[in-house]
Amino acid sequence: MSQKVAVDQDACIGCGNCEEVCPEVFQLSEEDKSQVIKPEGGPDCVEDAIDQCPVEAISWQEG
Image 1 (cartoon, rainbow, N blue to C red):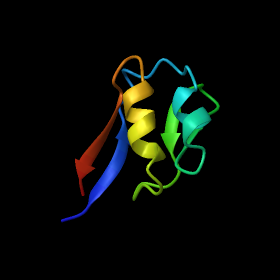
Image 2: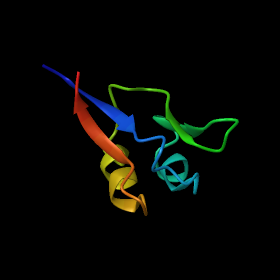
Image 3: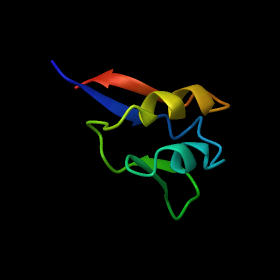
Image 4: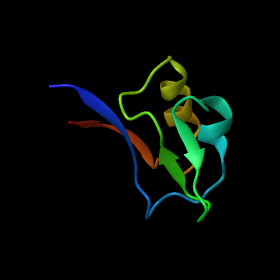
């Protein structure tokens, strides 16, 4: 089973760190919440985004 990147919308504070370090996978929505635009991930920057999220809203999910 493959893993997909997910963002906990309730936890997200819209800081934009994920979009800054990994724009290939994340972008801020109109509600200023992070959204995944490439769920299968991509470059190693996903791990950087996970590490830099101040509220730990980003994770890998089975999917």
